[in-house]
Length: 234
Image (cartoon, rainbow, N blue to C red; front, side, top):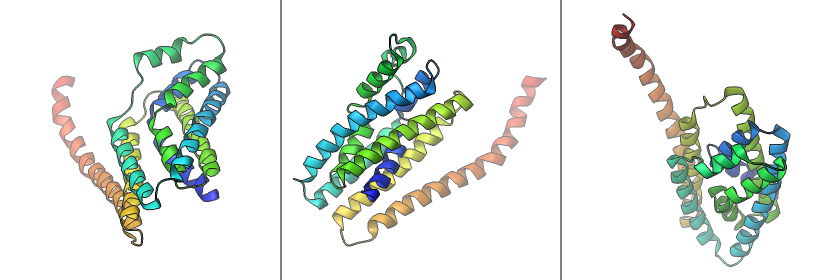
């Protein structure tokens, strides 16, 4: 159970980075007290993820382990592409977050419950529950989502809207690709270390590429900025 809790916490926490739910959490926190928003998110997440692990648990009993691993790997690769695409609030969801009336707690809970139905975090929870302890997945996924949304509320309050959304989105996508490669290769080659090696390589190459890009762009950008800006200042 402990392994399922830790795995689910990590996966769902990553899934929530840059997700629509974080945007909703920040928006609600601008209107209501933070503990009301957290309470609503917790109740909604607990209900949605209970349904998710139930579906995943019963599916897991009927699908071979190798097939589950392959399906899970493909699913996480899709989650990575989904995360790279980005996620924005629709006009209706933004109006709901800003102009909701009545009980703040019920408003937040109902909005998050509806937003999470069919979302990638729900699908990730279903995938995890097919091959792990369902109680551990339920606990870990719920805590992971609440923690990620709580982080969004805190960071949003401190930094406002000046968040590096592109960096967060790409980083989350890389981790999804790493999880996907691990599961996919683990299902295709059960007795091979190809899965963890490939996952580590994906993360390492991404980190090196990001560092190299920062080093190459830093001095060059600064050097080219002065001649361009000079005519405008005169």
